[in-house]
Length: 113
Image 1 (cartoon, rainbow, N blue to C red):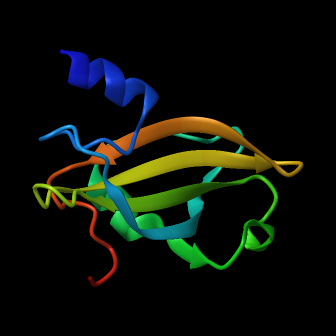
Image 2: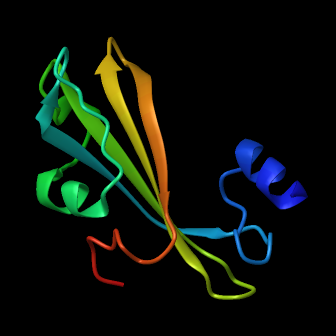
């Protein structure tokens, strides 16, 4: 129970052993199918695999289009891997968060190791 509470405040804790996980990769993606006024939340990893377009920086995302930041973590203690997906709308240099998802079963591995 304490592990779940800690995880709410610290997203880089391993869900298996509660050790601090190491960030192994961080990427930014545009979401061409998601626009202001037409955003629909999704929880299926397949949706993200099909609908993310790699961008180099936030400035490359068109105005009004949502973005997704993916961070891959690996636990140095038990080897568990997870991917955090943060869906947001870039607005005047800030990020208006819409949804945060965790994929713990390898279902959102969109890049090679």
